[in-house]
Image 1 (cartoon, rainbow, N blue to C red):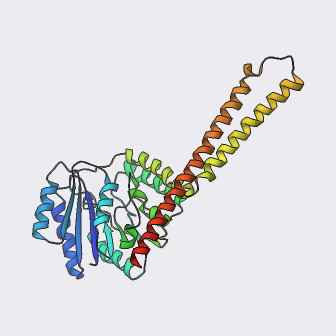
Image 2: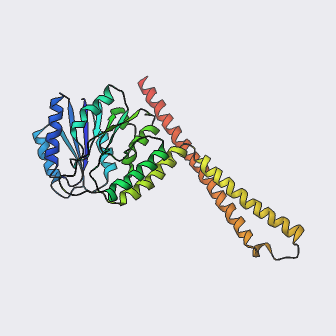
Image 3: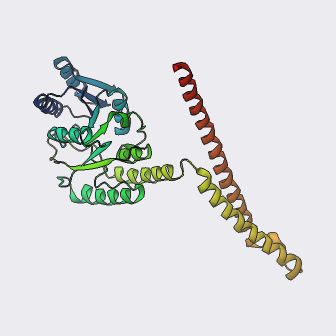
Length: 317
């Protein structure tokens, strides 16, 4: 199979027939073998009825239905698990992504050998204040933090080699950072293509300003995991050692001061420096232990994975 088109959606009943017909027209024009995977993320309108109708008319149409809204990341994860095509295309269901972009995306993956190609909506038809400006800030922060040089991380129109989507796990709200997840998994050839952005034809946007707040929080998470996920002791151990050393030096100073300098002064426990030093040593110890436990958990997980691999190799031999 050449292509799997994965389309997460929420309450898009009006746009689905038009989107389906548009995709089919492109597939037939280029003689692609394909499947269309509609992921209904808990729609409350007639979206699922439309998907069932389309699947009866076209055997290449398949659907997955969530009983409630789980989010775009979970919808993509479910679609990736089922996708069979050599190249996987993701796109939104609101007709703002053009299926006419698919042939060039397919060529970039198959001929230019990119692992992943992300769309770039250079000219947008969204509100400048509500989406464009926050999006530019978000993309700038994502570039600086991740090292992936893309202009539009949040574009829903992307193309992947099948092996890429089978080796990453999209959870939480990490769909914005799939290129970063792919890079961390070892897929370094990531490209970008300017794509057409169309004004929404039906319904309203399902995303508010809160997505940018969540996006920045997720960015911090993925930065931490990519930087210290394999070596938690390097962060927690370092911070813990510094905090403990500061507290110890405070306590040492207080002891010297009490024993040899201010022998007739007030008790150490009456001085605020004592509690600062005690707090610093306690926090330092806790941070160090957090790093130590993280290393133990990580090593245990790695050992389990190595055992599974060796067991699998043993069965094959």
